[in-house]
Length: 297
Image 1 (cartoon, rainbow, N blue to C red):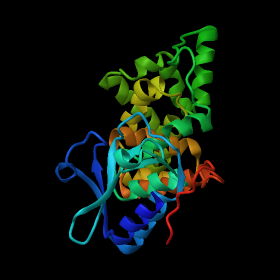
Image 2: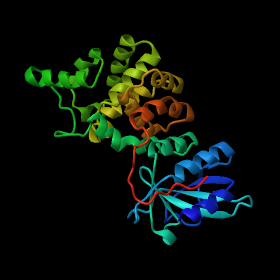
Image 3: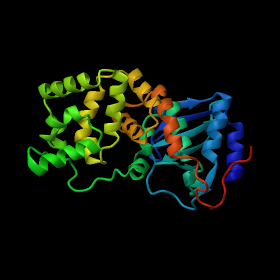
């Protein structure tokens, strides 16, 4: 496969990212998610998509999107389905040998920078493990109105870095109930938060840190995380970018990953969170030792 990759990449003038995996149908009829043709970016794509190790087999899933190489006339030179975090399957039916790329974090950040949706979400599982966010039982924070139950509710809220001014109203409801607050109660919480943290950039940082400390997946997706995302929606994209760029916190990065699942992430937000993700996920020292696949320059 290495010789084949050498040949097709040497003739490629564009890399397209298309929606759909192995079962996505005709390549020319699919939604175009991104296209790279600038020489420097094309060289970067080649490096990220060909350096790694072959697995000797294929993933059982069909992939969620497809990378396509095209020549100067627009003809397809080759294609690879993308499988989860950092795995490409070049001409799967022909070679049946997946490639685990050498630097998966860099690959997904590169794709995110090109505008491919859903790329920050690829960091979710590894961040859950790294930050110790695996949920336990019960999945949602419990309400506490008095005594030990109240003390425990306040302890959990404090551990999640929820502003102290919100401990009173939130301790009275569970995480699941926090997702279902009506407009009046949401407005009351919003007013308390704004009075306590009037600067929008600082408020964005507080909310992203809170969101990024919620256990996954129930609380973060369908519980307290819903409330935090509703509060974040009041802020501008510029506020979020400024908060993320000035943070460096792994939990803030996780907050961005959660936020991007529902609201996407434009180039500015990707650029702001990228340094933190690269610090947390540097190039692996040796991701496997099977059959080196790096293409010759």
